[in-house]
Image: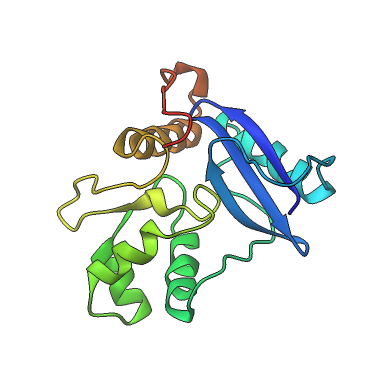
Length: 170
């Protein structure tokens, strides 16, 4: 499957494409098939992610095709509607998708195959606390992404954020 690995403030991220859409973003270096030159879509995704981490972009314009159940795809679509710099609770998302279980939303959120591009980091606990995060360095990564977006929206330099050291392969 075509993929490209990027160096980011969160460590390496690998973006995968299948049939003209982004299907996964993995924490760490992608291994497997023989490396091939990145496709036009992967180059575009890499450029948009670099702009995001540089603080000059808060959203993405890429075709996404996350693989999962109908329920999970519905949750991931709701996550994609959360504006940069804002958060929603698991309960908010549950209500939006017609689900009675914030726990089910948390499970769908944690299984998001395209983190950052589908902004699962923008979901917090009902009491406003940070909640959990299954990617990268966990909660530290989630805090970093939220702070990065807040700074980008306020016009502050992303470089003012401290570098976050995350495990290479969590």
